[in-house]
Length: 101
Image (cartoon, rainbow, N blue to C red; front, top):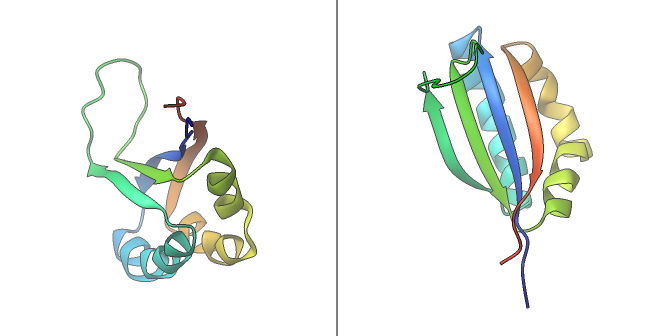
């Protein structure tokens, strides 16, 4: 039986690192854990080889299914902490469906 993973890919410009890492991250991690999410990548200053984006941090998070990724993003628990990210970073977030294996 094939299994399709779900992902959230984020491109961020963190404007207030202290607030982001001290206020947002401690609040979002337990919510991610509720959805069995796995951080695959969290990198500052990625090398942009094409395009003109001003990206300072990229994050790639894996979920057991595309539905689970969507459930996380739209959950009340995440919506309750999202303002902490809005207050400390600008971002482009993408919900991605993995390739069935």
